[in-house]
Image 1 (cartoon, rainbow over the protein chains, first blue to last red):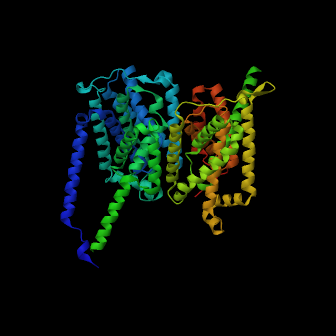
Image 2 (cartoon, each protein chain N blue to C red):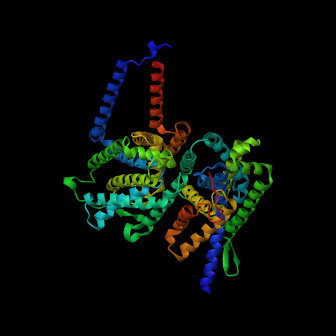
Image 3 (cartoon, rainbow over the protein chains, first blue to last red):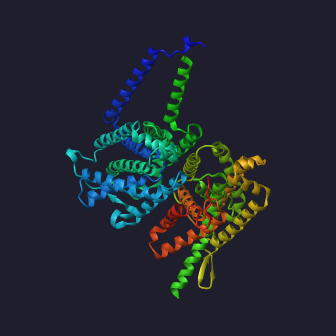
Length: 334
Length: 293
């Protein structure tokens, strides 16, 4: 045993932490000031933050509770269409249509989950695709409600607190608030009772049941929470797009994007979905000219690489590496 | 009388298109039955077959049906390659990792097709694409008839291969019990590869058969993947004979639903049936209840 040389050095560790905090604060200031610093990247910033929110919300069900859904675009569409139809048809101000959208999504998730949560693993995933596709076909065919395949155009929105919701700056901070709330909510839930219940259900439903956790109730609550959060992001996305078409909003490809973002970043981690979103959006921007409209190529390549070489996702793998290193040090230092 | 003729016409059309669906479903079902892989890339290989035929026809004027001679080995090779590079590394991984890996493959394939051929719909015109034969009052499309006959022949050959040949026996053993198969000396990895190659070749062949009839875009694969899922779940996952019946059923349900109910919901009828079977009869419409571990 050679204890003297491997004992961790507290001083160096503290420097690490200070540097970490400084970097974190720098990133936060950068994010908050992006509209001023890089006005040309405002649209990219909004898209990125909305994806962070969606992926984080998806992860409540897909990562923490382990129920991989490929149908979450339905909630995006529901949110966006509630905003658009509310404003156009019923003169509903956005601060009313947003809660309505969230409630509708929660209700839809409840009914959807009641029916399909008896399916497990890949079968549940297949059922989510089917439900979302049926809803998409509904959005295309029920012209009286949704305007059909051509969709609807959000002409005007009431101004909450005098803010113009079509203004990209307002949308940016709205999206920032949304993404931050989603991540904060997950960070809040993770170490609490519900967080442990979700993980217990993910790891082993029978064992969870034996320990007094009702798996169906936990899955339903996770689905409702996830759906409500995604729908709120959908409301925001509706204002961002303002031209709402079912092909973009209810599309399987959008569901796949949301799910893969979270999985690539790291399922069941607080920061994984956000990291995944940043990585993918930046990579897509970098290769935009090269790949043009084949934008899902990056998702495909990354997910194959992640499944093969980092099955826990980027953040998950990093956390595991850190835990192992800490353990190795503690063992070596004893 | 006229209504009856229309009904017969619809039924015949549904059965014919159902034959093509059956062929897509059989490949998916085979891969699932043997490898327990839910293959999201299955439909993309149909699109690959369609573009391959376009290329061969465009450069050498090769007749689509002659393209089969090139397309089937090509699909088989593509399947072997993907199994070797990706799926063989995931044999003992959790079940959703193969699902995600094939989803990734699907995205890579469809977007690569997009880069190579652009997003516009393409089609191939051959004289006999619109040829029909009349059977009493009912008109039947010749290419679909050929496709249906080809489907039956291929599925027959597949069933013979699986039930009579040594490799087929080994594949069935692998499907039933991988460890047991290994204990009696079967190289299960090699048979996984063979199975995935066969499944991919079947879907590429479907693409070749369909291109004289339909447009192709790079995004079309997803539609076929969904159809294949519906067909296999209707027939029972892993049940080849069930997949044939499931395909016919889907074709008929779609055509009848589109003509007698709302046409815009054509794709929805199959999905509703899919959900109902998944929820209430997970062994498929025709299978016996088997508890799988």
